[in-house]
Amino acid sequence: MKREQGISLLGFLLLVALLGVVALVGFRLVPAYIEYFKIKNALSAIARDGEMREAGPQAIRGAFDKRAKIDDIDAIDGKDIEVNRQRDQLVLSTRYSKCVPLAGHARVCLDFDVSSAK
Image 1 (cartoon, rainbow, N blue to C red):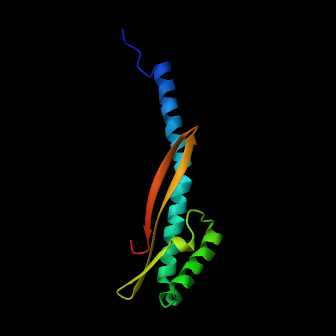
Image 2: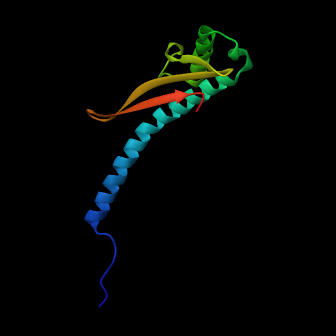
């Protein structure tokens, strides 16, 4: 006689619960990473801009604030950006943390280090 193979009801329910938790965490973390890539793209675009290479730090921060309004960036402001010049190249960088609530009192805190040079 051949034994039946497959997943039991309890195994199936545990699998669904595990997938639900992974999906919940994923859905909560994706917006934070999307914002990270928006910030990285904005810093890189400003650093590549010919007019910004000669501009002062205040003008560069103002340009970022304008881009942040358009791209809906809320994690940082222009004042959070470090402006450096390395070998005739503009390098913009910032560090920030973003805490994402999961459920109840549980949350995940992410630390981001963004630079136009990377």
